Length: 438
Image 1 (spheres, rainbow, N blue to C red):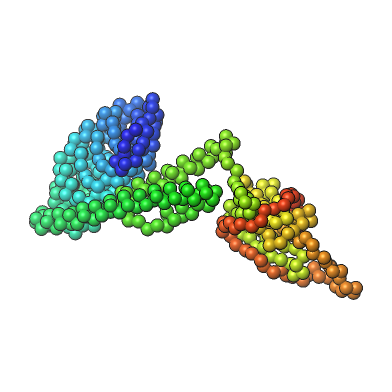
Image 2: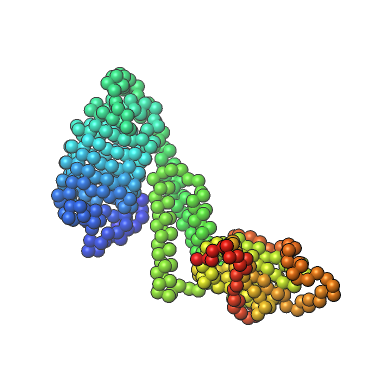
């Protein structure tokens, strides 16, 4: 096991196996396909978005490199590339670098891109004075780029530099920078000290936030085990994490990466369990017999009671183009359960219904599922002689009293069902002009 710069632990790859976070020979060879896998004569190498946390061995493997892309990784410092004498272009944008260092051996370096890093020690640009061929430098998006006198200090410190942050350096600008270099240097050093204190506070806050998240995660695991709320709690935790406001620091960037990696591993293990058939079935009823209200697919729904109190009607907003064969409806005396693509919607009913007399219909226009469930023990009175016929009432709007509606996942505890019965579904709104569902 090796420890990363931020305390994360990574496994070393065995037999050249690539491990996320490490720069391995297998990874370099996989990116050298254009050179037939030969890394020793490689002149250009792209290792962007590989989640690399440390630069190791690259200076021993690819001595002939001229162009090296390392943007969008997690590299905390520049190291182990001093032996790349022929390196001309180094791209380290979008990393966690805080100072410029260890580039003295790159004698032929012409362009250095450190966009969107965390360089706050502006005086570290003096280490680039040994790079006699350096013409372009990019520091935009770094804390030091906000310093008063930033551009003048860099221009005066690197007399051979021609372009800074994409803007050409004029001869008159260099003359003015050299004239005010003493005053600018004092101001820069003062701002560096302020930045250093701020970074110490950010590190402390980052460590505290990391410990709080670990404690919170442990508490949520206990609650999840006790209440069997794995899916809901995971989604809630993810929403809270991304909504939390945090400063943009190397610690917060690494924390976000670790969170995404944990989610990826959790989803991967869940898919693997489904493949092997070892995934644990979700509990729909508590051990004491109380039913849980569940809305895993997060469908909008509406439960209404007929005016005469003879039945309940559930309107479930299924996806319009969802194949009906993927929908399974199950009406029980005390609840209704709808399964869509292995996701369960379960709702406890206010009163007992008759499963055998229930009817499920699917709208070809909206895709909604409508389930009508007659109540048990309700005696319907016959219509008086001479009253309006059913055909005469078809044009009148059907009225119902809303009982419950919503769209969020929730759970309550009510008595358990007595038996189970499947319901066949038919289509309503049968219109020849409307194409059938796919």
